[in-house]
Image 1 (spheres, rainbow, N blue to C red):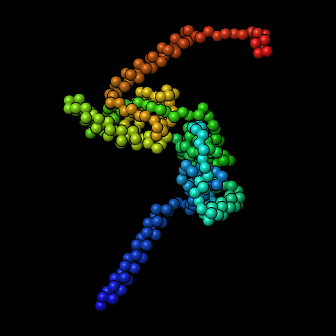
Image 2: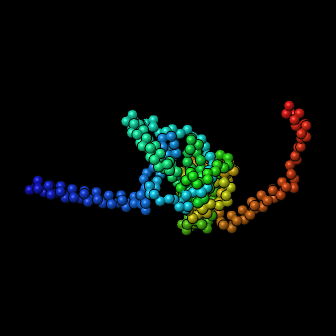
Image 3: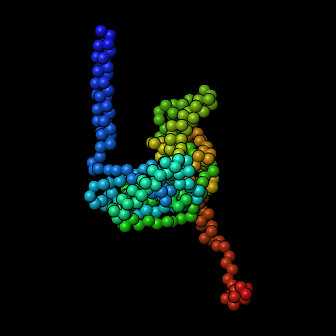
Length: 300
């Protein structure tokens, strides 16, 4: 009958749902399986670092960390000071109570574990983080990828605060471009400028935006960089000393340059720099020497 058919169909659907549920469970285990048991580290309420980075995985095994897993030295440079809120203003009263209870649990867990949970922070070169409202960037670390151990890792703060780059200009090296972009470049002079514009738009979206967008890259007076296999030469910075590429940075993409032309241009720039340095050594700036007595008299 129709009722029996519906019942049979219902049983079949239930079995299918159970099978799908098992498949989902297996896939979840497969995706989350690790060599050692891991747990998610909840961020401390007083620590604002979690507002700009995802939750960290923390090792719960009793094995000690090897030297290859732990950073030995880290050098960071301040970028800017931001007003960072604790992210609790939008919570309801019940959610705040739950957050407070979770915070108490984390505090007790940290106390019982000797505070080791706070030490398991992963850093790599170029990563940015916020501490006490100040944004920092990891300029160098040894090894380049590892965990922070507050007892053994030496952390250094070095250099002046980094500036944001307002504009920069770059040129791709023709020989390193993919074949289809090389073809568009070679035929653009004989057809029209629309082909060249299309090629540069494609290069910008596939390489320039993919390298810079949302990553806060630091660039200085480097002559060349590698954009996913394409060599790019920088021709102009504003400010000239370099800095951090942000979402407000205006990036000008120039037409490709041959490798030989780039080499000749770099040699000329090096010669000009050496000539200026030699002139400064030959004609040093005059120095004014003030006798000590006159100096103290001036101070009074």
